[in-house]
Image (cartoon, rainbow, N blue to C red):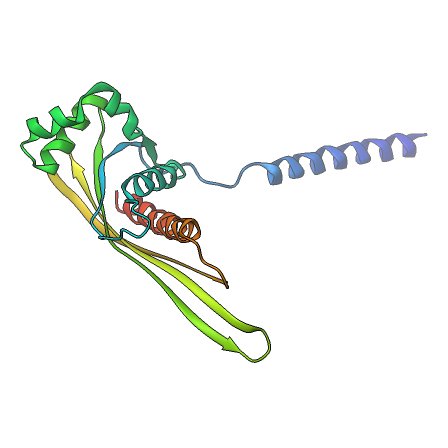
Length: 206
């Protein structure tokens, strides 16, 4: 009987120890973000690429894509640009800043209490199609889009540039037909890739 009780006791201790080990292993392994979260917003993201096929500028696409990318960064507390646009008239803000984008960034930061403000720009959008004549599969057309972005991060406390960064994104797809809407989707995907890279570069330096 004593041996039986002793065996049960040892089994109980073993099970408790095993459950503690499993519990520790199941705990999240991601470390907490280093330093305080940075309140950040985007003042502008202008399309200076002169890409006009389909007559669609990509300002809004780039701004939205960068906001989505920044929201995935644990160190950033993003204030979406539509928040400050609800508080102020953007045309009046431009006039008050006298056309100076850094002063505009400073004024926006004052409205939403941002620690840093991004001024971005699409510098290049390149779309091309290359034909590949294969004796087996027939003619295939390879469509690609490439995007270059630049961004400045402004410290609103002293209206100074904290850092400048650039990023590149590209996408390639194969098909026989390529419509305007397909090209626009390809460009949008290249922008999304570039903004994800840009967000990582910016946050790593703050």
